[in-house]
Length: 546
View 1 (cartoon, helix red, strand yellow):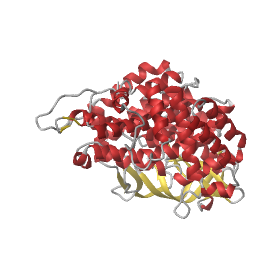
View 2 (view 1 turned 90 degrees about the horizontal axis):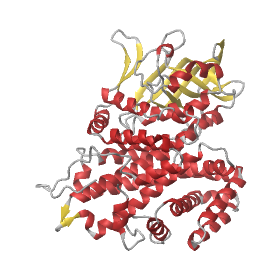
View 3 (view 1 turned 135 degrees about the horizontal axis):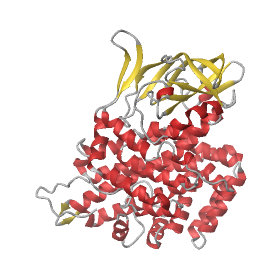
View 4 (view 1 turned 60 degrees about the vertical axis):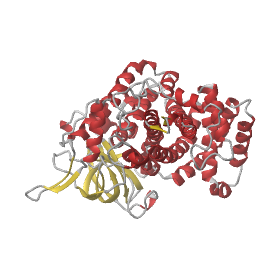
């Protein structure tokens, strides 16, 4: 990113034709540190693709021309088809080709999680709607392996790097996408109140078959080739089923799309309400164990929320930095105005620490070591909570940097800002994430001690952080009812301690010192830019872009 000089109208040129990967030193270092240097050349290619003007135009078009629902054919036949602009399929093709739908489950290297994380982080910066069906497809893979016959037939279609947009039965597809149907109107996150029923319909090549009747209030990406769906059986309760769009006999399955949700953001992607009218499905996992089975899928997509939200922050910061380097006021570039420099430095710290947190979490998904397992259990919901919350604040600040130019649909900031809240809500809102952190602590107290012991070790020499870790130790000893009231406080403190440890380990001395100084200052928090914790904020800003 370079300053282009004062435009005759003092208007800033679009940020385009840049490399999203090579311009991000924190991301590239995390890839190398995570053992994924083998993917560096590919990520350089992807970074150029994501920053190219053609990709930016496709992302815009996919969101400007929203999906359209067609419930019936002209002759009255039920088709329940959602039609997309070609730009949507362009973005879906890029996501699929770049490994976001499957890489960590078809590459045996543990570092594949890091390589995957980098791709998702970049893709989310440019077009977020297409990540929904793509990351759900990836997350379904370990769940579908629980039905060996089903997985054997669909494995090649899940492993494919091509996007097959055809609306045809599974047998004829070269690749497939898989979505999820959990929540219902009467319960939301409380899926134990679900009322959708599944009635046995015999045995088939894929095992136990059922006919499913009921509804789903949020049915993500209804044009996916299949969905993992929660429904109750009479004998065993909530179970998980694979429900394809087309039945094995070639007829359309009885999944009736009632309407598409009119969402605040994520508008390129179709989310829907559906009714099942004896829809055909097959059991995945043990009958009666549907919630734990499908939660395995949700756990992986929570990682995706943390990664994508870090990407939102990075893109907001990149746009703000580009704008302030090329917009002039009172005789000099905005970036050199002291109050703006302080704000950008604070944004740079927040973006770097969010990226470190998300990529560190991704690196631990490829390992079964005790500390890695403990880190995943505690920090997956915690990182989702924190990064998603901070993304809303940071994209709002980035929009404000543009002034009125940020509040019009001609530029990228409106769409970026509208995308930010979805990750806080999807796969469990903030309160649910904080309660999941406490649940992990109560179920596996040794995990909490492992994580805190690690943080104690990596923060040696920083008295404020040592005190913070000790405070967290005291909090985990509280009675459950007392700790639950402080669920958000505990989660925030855990994340900030984890981020501080990561900054001390992997950031520059200047950045890590600034992070500790600012984030543990009593005045830090409500408003970005109060303090970047350093006497030279410009150095942080310059180091954040290569």
